[in-house]
Image: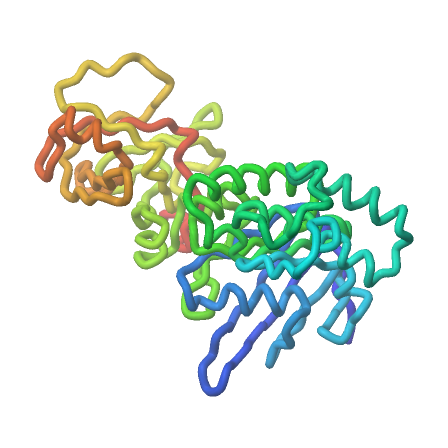
Length: 372
């Protein structure tokens, strides 16, 4: 098989398919992870995320397709390639013994001298916030502490690729939030190529540089995190990430790096260099949209998009309310706190002012191309 050229992509896979019995669990045409970047695999339970991670991490053989590492085809039989990867999973799988012994396990298998092991273990425990914990029993650790040890055990191997499969999903929200921040910081400081599997979009956004959203074994959206979250390709993906499908419109004005997009009602301003007449998809994340009462005097700001609309939907999503506002036929969503909903007395039919910055609008050319 001919090797693909190395273009800065650490891992690439083409035509990956995996079946369990007669059920197709993964059917992904293309996926890649740029060197030194984190790819978040996001999707509901049963979407095939963990299976795809196992295939990309050379832990499981696909029924069809090919995985490339640094442009070279690899498989589960490539011991040298597998030694360049390390993993941590939802359950830490710590064995009886000390924290130091658990962290040093992989180094022991690689026959590193004792002095080198002690130094490496001490260094990595400090990196994960467990400095001096070498002699503690692994069986006495809390869930968060055990996950830090599991991450340390992977990092101490200085892997080319780090695989993290739902590492925080079993933790309580307070510990999870702290670990998510720490894991993101450590991975970025290490400039390590990472595949991060999660069903939590907050984790995916915090951890990922790029994102793949999976549904029923297939990739339904992939690209830069901001683009995927801002421009979901269909209704299901939009609902899953708590957004609205993109608006379809036409660029009608362009000057000084700003464009005006007619979306069939309001003209939305965004940053970009597209020419007038270009058909585009435009979207804005709900958390970037501010709502004010219909008759409120809005303070001056840099937000170029200001519209009057009517609330058509209001739903409680966790600690926030998700509202959809109709602006001359265009649906724009906003995420609003409970306190703001009470204070503004928001409900279906409420008249509100919708405000968001041009820089918050994600835009890409629509497949229809340019208007004639």
